[in-house]
Structures are given as C-alpha cells and as structure tokens.
Amino acid sequence: MTKQGYHGPLEKIDDFCWRIPKQYKAGMKVEGRIFADDRLVEQIRGDQAPEQVANVAFLPGIQIASLAMPDIHWGYGFCIGGVCATDPEEGGVISPGGVGYDINCGVRLVRSNLRREDVEPRLTQLVEALFRRIPAGVGTGGPYLFDNKQLKQILAAGSQYLEAQGLATPGDIEHTEAGGRLPEADPEKVSQRALQRGSDQCGTLGSGNHFLEVQVVDQVCDEEAARVMGLEEGRVCVMIHSGSRGLGYQVCDDALRAYRNLPARYGISLPDRQLACAPLESPEGQDYLGAMRAAANFAWANRQLLMWQARETFAEFFGRSWESLQMGLIYDVAHNIAKIEQHVIEGKPKTVCVHRKGATRAFPPGHPEVPAQFRSIGQPVIIPGDMGRSSWVLVGRPGSMERSFGTTCHGAGRVMSRTAAVQDAKGRRIDRELAAQGIIARARSWKGLAEEQPAAYKDVSLVVEVVHQAGLASKVARLRPLGVVKG
Amino acid sequence: MYEVFEHTADVGIRIRAGDLKGLFEEAARGLFAILVANLEAVRPVQETRFRLEGERQDDLLFDWLAELLFVFDTQRLVFATFQVELHPRGLTAVARGEPIDLARHQLNAEVKAITYHGLKLQRDGEGWVAEVIVDL
View 1 (cartoon, each protein chain N blue to C red):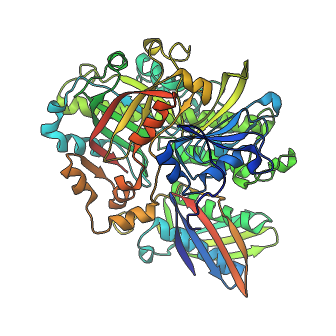
View 2 (cartoon, rainbow over the protein chains, first blue to last red; view 1 turned 180 degrees about the horizontal axis):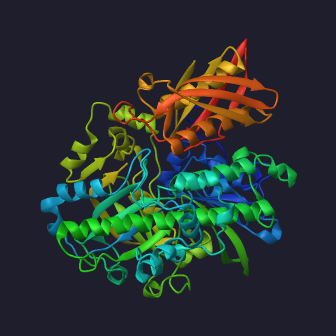
C-alpha cells in the first residue's frame, strides 16, 4: 500500500489544463481534465489521483469530462478535488464516493470590525477562550443536545431550523450556500445509527483538518470585491472549517453498504468498487440523494452553531455584543456535495447532478443563486489554507461555468501522510514553531497539531494561482492565521 | 498478529493469523490499537455481544470493524479482548472492555470510517492475511 505514481498520459491543453485522453483506458466515456500548472503537475504524478480521474470517466451519463482541481490528491473512488456532472436523462448516476465521507465538509468566513492591533495584545487569552468554548477533538460531544424529533428537523431544514430557534439571523441564512438548507432532503432515509452519531455532535468542530481560526486580512487583490464583502487589510476575521461529523460519515457508510452489489444489477461496470453508484432516477439513487441532502443540512447547522459559539466568545471577551463587533457572515460554502444544477452543455441547458468532492462551487457575477449583495462581483469562495500559511477569499468567474460546471478548488491538499507528518514532527513542538511566527495554536492533542503541520500540505497559494489564471475564480484577498483551535 | 501501516491521509491495518477466527480477533485489536494508545490499560470487565450476517468474508470483516467502531462512537466503550465464532452465514462475537475513562485511556486517533479501499482477505500459505484502510 505504498504510494505509487501515475505513469499514464497527461497532455497539455493549455498552461493551466491537462488532458487524460479517452483512449487511455477502455471504458472511459469522456476524457479527463486536470487543472494544474507545470510545477503542480509534477507533484500530481506522485500518486494515483490521475488514475482516479480516468476511472470516474466510466460513470454512466457523465458529461463533457471527468475533472480535477489543482489541489487534487488521492481519495476513496473519486480523488479529492474531483468534479463530474451526470445527466439523469442519459442514465446519469449519483456516487457517494463523489461526495465524500464528510458530506458538506465546508468552510465559512465571518468578518468583524476588529483590527489586528485590537486582538494581538491579548491573542493568547482570546484563543484560549475559544478553545475552552468550542467543542473539539476525538469523541467529544457538544452542549447542544437534540432529540430525534429535533434532529430530523435539522436534517430537513438545516440552518433555517436554527433561525426559528434564534440561533441564526436572516443575514446568516442569506449568506450561506443554498440558504443552509437543501430542499427535498429526506430525513427518513437517514438511519437510526446516523442519528445516534449525530445527536450530540451538532455544534462541534471534530478533528483532523477541521479548525476554527482567528485570521487577519494581509493582502487585498481586488479592492472592489473586498469592499463589497466588508474586507480590508488589517481586519480580523474568523474562519470555520467543519462538516457533518459522525452523522455524515454514517450516511456515506450506509450508502456504500447499500450500493455494494448495485452497479452490476443496473448493468454498470466499474474499474473501482469505490465508485459504487446508482442511476439518479432509481429508488436507491433517490434514497442516497435524500439522505445526502439531510446530512448536508446537518453540516450547515453545525457550522452555524460553531459560528454562534464563536460570536458569543468574542462578545464576552471584548465586552460588547457580536452585532456591535459587526461579526456578520460573509459566506459559507460546501466542498463535499452533490447538487442538481442547470448548466449549458454543448449549447443546450441541461439539468445535471454535479459532484464536488474537495471542490467548491464558484458561480460568476449575475448568477441568480449568488446573494444580491454579491451579484455584481460573483459568489465568494473561501479557500482554507493550512495552519501556518494563508487562506484565501476568491470570487467565481464566468470561466467556471464554461470549464468546470461552476467549480473551483477547495484548499491545499496533503503531500505527507498523517503518519509521516507525525514522524517528521517527533521531538518538535509545532505549537512553539507557530508561536514563533506569531500564531497561537491550541489543539486537543499533540498529534492533532503534528498531523496538520504546514509541511504536510501543498502551498495553497500555488493552487489558488492556477484557478485564478484558468479563469475559474479570481483572487480577492489573502488571510493570515493569528490563532488556531483544533481537535 | 497485526501491524499498522501508512497510507496517504489515513492508516491501514494488516492482519495475519493462522485461522479466520484469529484474523477477525486480531483485526479488532488492531482497530482499537489505533483508537487507544495504551490498549493494555483497558480492563475487560464489561461484555458486549455481536451478531452479524454476511456471506462474503471480506465484507463481513468490514462489517465487524464498522460495528465495533459504531459501538465505540455511540456508547463510548473500548474493548480489549475479542472472541469470534464464524458461521456459514455470518459471525457471533463477544468483546470485553469498559467505558472510556479519559483519566486512564489515552485516546489516539479519531477513526471516522472503515473504507473499502484495498480491502483484502485471502489465504496466505497456511494461514490468512487481510488489509483494511481506515479513514482518520
């Protein structure tokens, strides 16, 4: 099970896009396309992710190409950074591996009117206050407990359920992808097991690469877009990266179990068992779609509650309300999800199922799903970086609709396994190394920090540069971490 | 015996045993060794019984580990010893352990899911070998 490279074809289409020809493997219905530059493409050859891009091209109903973003790396079935669109009218399928285990893992960015100099003198205390307040880490539950009935309401209505409880504002709803609620979610298709795993986890951060960060805007690339978002250099923000916790994992697990022998029954032949799928229009396809939407709603509720707890912590710490600190939500995006969307394909509008696994929606200016406030600039895209380095805010460009079903990258992508990262970190105090850079990190376990050390990741700025140059999304601002809370 | 091996973002368990029963028991120990750093501190004082159905042995191994993970996650129990009986259509098992006590048990990694990737269970000479990747 050691890392093997990819030795198949990668043909340059242009400086930022590479092709895996359809002829590479018999069974590919379309070609593969990977967005990358010359530098990244060498790294990309380092694992089997391009092979996975070729495998996804086998899926029935797949449109145009099997795509991958520049933060591509190996995943289960689909690579991370994988994108495809399937047309139900052509027998198009839905594949749980094309969404990922952590359904609606995503990220939100909260602004404030605080400046760096307001926060830095007491940064350690602020991070410790957040660390005490935000539930994080292995096997931790949180303070918000929901019974089965309430959980089902969260599954049905996501953030909008919380609005009714006074835990979300109309502005929060408007600034969340899908308003924090996918309609036609089917809570009844979420198993009792998944409900049990989720019951005390709504409003908890999780572990691994999930985090809550206090950040500062350290570079503005697009003055107008930044102004519209309420961002300027030196402003303090909070970024939250988390997903659907144990509930989402269980929904994926349940679907993969249900789909074990299904493809054969529908006459679908796959090169990898983990691409297990069902036609969208089949009962099994609809069951997973309904359950996935429910789990996505849970994740939005989760990030909403995490934000609420962060707002309350800031309010207590600074002695004024979060509203007077102007801690408004800029935007929340999903990066592990399947959405039914309209796209123009070969000149015709089609309704397709877009799978985004470690990839973010990036709708352009004018798109009706972009909140009114941002319609002139495009949909905000939040790209979390790794702990020691930057995160980015972008906006969607027309190029995304033309080239990638309205999609862009999601983050940096791992280059070092967790074990290797921990090995590399032995004898080192990652928290002290970060502190030397002015970053205060608190994690529930040493391992949590070691696994996530900066060297374990690609440089997100390189990834962002590619999507910017490829016309998928353009750079608005760069954010630097000041404080990090992890599980 | 089991060993833990490295795999990109996650971790794998490779198990070798003389017979299938032993393989399933060792696989369970391997899973809990990833979850708890000091497995030797877990006292086998509480019993939990399992019954699983399945005919494909690799899927059954998967289901066995997934079931153990579910019990760990929802009932907050850790297990130290396992007794597995395999039948033509599934397995029954007894696992012995105790509720998680953060004062004595060092929780190690959060295993979020058992994956199908590279799932292997096959004869190896006189015995058996299996490999499972878990998602951290």
